[in-house]
Length: 272
Image 1 (spheres, rainbow, N blue to C red):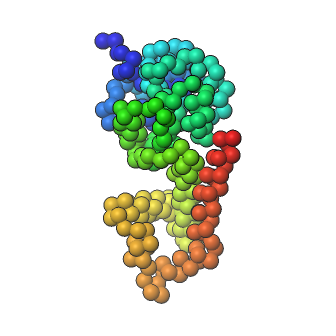
Image 2: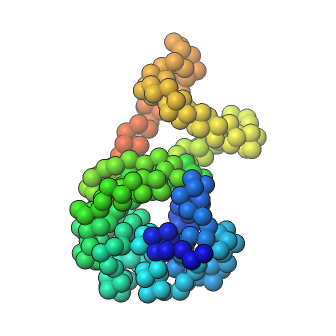
């Protein structure tokens, strides 16, 4: 059976995030693998997509993609999207819903690029690849309630999603967009500390990973403030308070705050 335009989901770009979103859409039951259309120039990536999503359609140009899909994820890097925007503009019609995951390109810029306000801008993060993503999204002026519902369902397929204003997506970028790198650095440092204290590297890394995962799940499942949970493990005169004193003396808390702000500021700079 030939699928209609509305039954297909198009991806301009077939890289890691496009693949993650497609996987999530299949697992959540939003689409079947043969409902995807990927515009991807790399032959090796085309082979991976064809293997991962049996029956999917792979095209070589935006001119082939846009006429057969009404919902299209713009899953290319910001500089590439800027370079090809003039070519895409002539392909966009009023029925198209465009979803951009290109970091730093604002809704107003996207609307100007494509002469459309039926746009959603999403800032996902890399844990979406294991369906544990944290995303923020903002909608253009003419996005419909159905557009909002569909985008929410798509993004929930790869994790959690929050609605924010377009200007707040810079803060989302600084926190959750770049945040996995901060946490991975922390895991690496904890593992190094374990090795320095006498553990084998594989044991130290396993413990560090599970400790971070477990602490995050405690916050998520109890709903308690992180400070309350921290106090529960901090005994008077014990090992934890000794360690926390070192972290406070070294400015770790303020370093994390400044890191998020720096990434958010850089996102704003890239949008200019």
